[in-house]
Amino acid sequence: MQLRTEIQIATMIKAMKDVVIPAVDGKNDLALQQAQLVIGLLNLMAQQLPMQFRFDRDELQRLVACAQGLSAVQTNDAAIAVAAQQLAARRSAATAVLERCATDPAELTAAIRDLREATGALMSAAAGGQDTATLRTVENAVLALSKEQLLRDRSLMLPQGWEPNPAAVPAIDALLQ
Image (tube, rainbow, N blue to C red; front, side, top):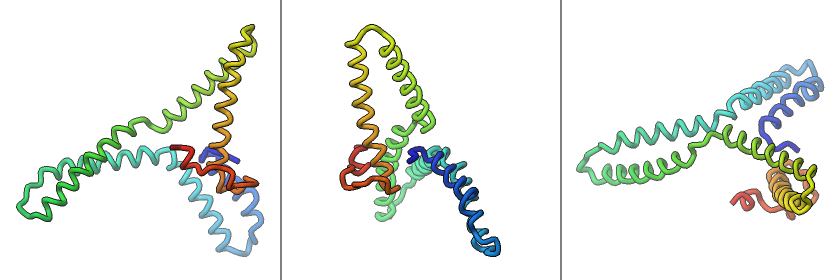
């Protein structure tokens, strides 16, 4: 069970190269071509996925700028005026979204990694220290976090089919609200 998409894609590529393609009948050119196409598309996904958020954010910035430019439209046509008002309202909403998504996903994952490392350092210091009350506090906090994280991980991976009782695991959308 892998959570990170980049690891999932690398695993699929390896499986295709090491297991699937060698098992395909060498005389079946179409099957071999399709298998190579799958590998090519997975490689492309691996390259594009890290920049998808930035790509979408850039598109939204460009659309907001275009809508801003279109706000200069002056008309006596009622239908055009209504459409321009709707565009202005949606531009305003899109601008708010754009402001909220200023952080790059790479910064987010780096912050997660850094905080995990610092939490681990505190755990190690508490485990090696003499303050048993602090050790209990740290252990309880980390175990509570681990319990929540495990449930989220299991929920995220439900589509992979590993859960013996999928109905017992809440939907990921509910857990992320």
